[in-house]
Image: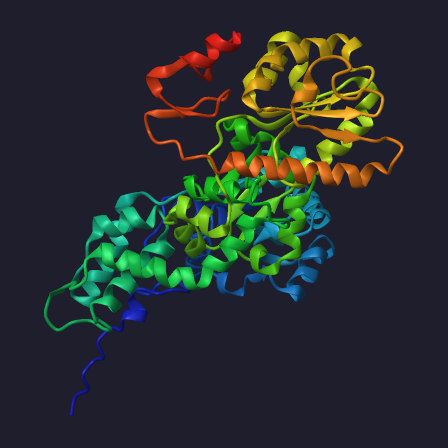
Length: 537
């Protein structure tokens, strides 16, 4: 009795891992990849975001090359492999070696591999060929270690696959299963990722009850929006907790500027699943202070290193300041997050900011030690603080009055002025105080008096609530107490009503105004405050 061929199973057609049997689609870089792999002696770097098809393409290409199955395949994710990778420069006649997840190697090992690649190229060694796989800018990272590597290796960049190739994958799988699948909807949701396309096709079939090829042509019984919602819900069970963990950062401050949450949101908005934080910070001056602090001080790198669950999903290169998503399913999840609701769920009071700084410090040079301590305490609470020592590079070649005036007039939510005995006699403190003097009526100037300058000695600041510093007492405790008071003050400010489209919050009176009441497009002041306080803008 003749045997009946088994119908192809869903998991064989739309595979969630491994090289697809029925739905492998060559990425646009595939031809160049084949040529690079079979060129002896010359190093190859294959870079691109996770889930874009790098590893699958390399595996498929090796199967087409004579002896490709004998290639030594290593990954930095495996401890035993890391030792072998580190020893590669000492190996002779190593043959074809594939090093995956290169970006996860320690910096000294990456530098050693870079030198080895240069040596192999210079000596035209035909007995060893190293192929490196990594996230975006893996080639750039290598060249940073060995500048003269440029031109000595092939760098092949896998980018988001074009829509027609994603649709080809969907179409080929649909033909095998004898189904009608919505190619366009799936390709748009996949955003260039073969892996996500496989996942969505798999989920769509499961939702409609199709587990194998159908004897007659069938269509889906569940609409794709329903399928997408189910996929996001399923992924939420895996990724919501870890996303919230990253968004809170190592020290959660609900009143702060949420630097970790914003970095995650910037990632979700990126087209390449990889962002350069320096570039993103320049685009968003209102978040420069808070995000720069966690990046430049090494807090971000330490946070990811200390938390393995985060390190599995996100990678940060401390040298290039590139932050990347490592898991395509996690990228799909954050891409579909409702960020306003997510921020509320995490616990932040407000993530929309109308000013560049939360606080601007004004002080005479003799009190720099105190100012520095206050600055550090506020930064630790994830606030954006104007402190002149941090602005030296930006101040260079600038007109100081033009640079500083807007900060004290309106670009900081609050001005903290350290009123020591020397404050009224310094040129720059006189200038700064002229800029924010009118803001006393708007409850946005916080005086800090020293024992040698009690309230009312120089002016009428005594009628404004402030804080007393006693330099004869330990500084640290007083600074921490003041920072906590400022934190509570800012929390009240963060809880002000949300600004709707067509409205803005005046930086002076904090009242919500209609946009036609904006005094000037560059500074968010209402007409009444601009006239009342005669603020130059």
